[in-house]
Length: 211
Image (cartoon, rainbow, N blue to C red; front, top):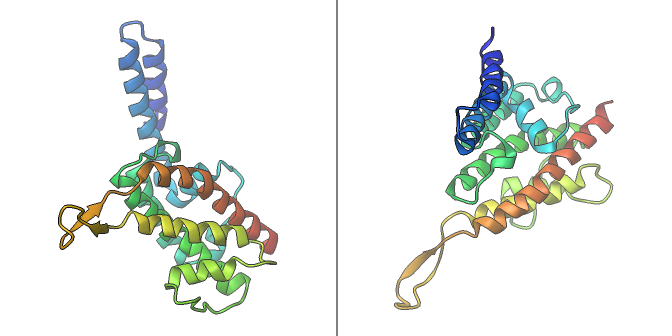
């Protein structure tokens, strides 16, 4: 019996048990489900990451086109999974910043290939923006299949920046600065709403070009 089969059997036994209190059952089942997710993700972190967030089972075979970049994408996706094993389990706290940073790096492997190999364009700096946001803005234009993804990634990059140390003047002492806590709940809401659409947009764009 494989380790995953053992976890499934354990879950079934916990659910059928009459010796455990309801709250203890819930905790044990959650722990088992988290472990199952991690083990499934270990086979191909990128594939798990993409399907988990987009809620799509039939996604484009990115490995066939990304080449060596696919290994980088897997590594960044693995970082995301180790922070939160499931997209539905994102939490509005400091870990969200680390998750989003790794998630953006995962998608950047798709972005660079799409811009250079699908659109056949060189990355161009956009209005003083950094390299990452310039690529998103370059993709976000009329007539580009993945324009929606470009718009969303530009927005999410801004959300990531909001979670960096932001400061303001201390109202008690204007000569001093204080750190402003990020609005994690608002940022999480935007991630939940927009990030799946970005992945779906890229999935559609890659399928449209290569199939």
